[in-house]
Amino acid sequence: MSLQQGAPALNVVMLGPPGAGKGTQAERLARTRGLPKISTGDILREAVHDGTPLGLAAKATMEAGNLVPDDVMIGIVGERLGRDDARRGFVLDGFPRTVQQAAALDRIMDGRGPLVVLDIVVPEEVLVRRLATRRICSECGVNAAVEWTGACQRCGGPLVARTDDGVGIVRERLKVYHRQTQPLVDYYSTRPSFRQINGNQPPDVVTRSVDDALAAAMTKDVAL
Ligand SMILES: [Zn+2]
Image (cartoon, rainbow, N blue to C red; front, side, top):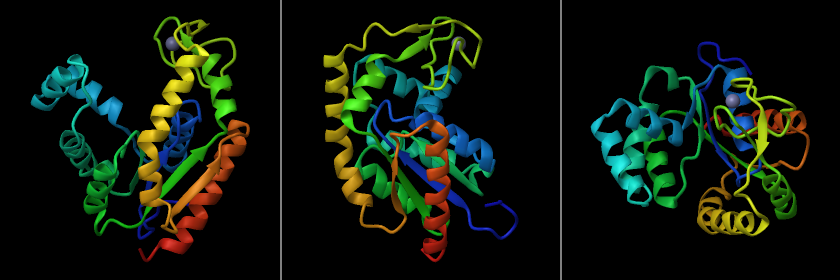
């Protein structure tokens, strides 16, 4: 699908538990379609780095060990989606996380074309295995993608095993994810533009599934 004049905007939300490969797929999708990948984590880090009022407020909240409140996150994302580079579409990674955020996103999207929601699904046992053996870059600290062998593809540094991801911790993280995300899946799952993707496949096969799901969702939902 190309993004020539007149083509509908490609607005994508990616959902998926830790270890599902969501970040990798969001990155690939954004790159191949020429869309911005919008991650709330990145925006917050940028705002903190720039010392904006928003960044300072978010920093204080996170340092106190609290989640950034819904209205702050909604404000951040609304501002980001209002920029020019997001007019032809975007790939959202890490937002929405709550039903309140999802409802706010629907209001932001009013008149901007369909919102396609892709939920990457991977069996729990596979996630546990992936996460418990997850590696990070010892230089820049980025999480290694599953397909990285040898060295960090961001900075070339050596990859090392994470030590804090014991199986018990991993299971707890997944439990928290599902408890938080199930209401969101329920919120979206009745829409024809909601698609589940089998993430228990090699990354390139998942990428093809994502492309197929987008093509199907866009054909059906252009009028939404
Ligand atoms: Zn690195």
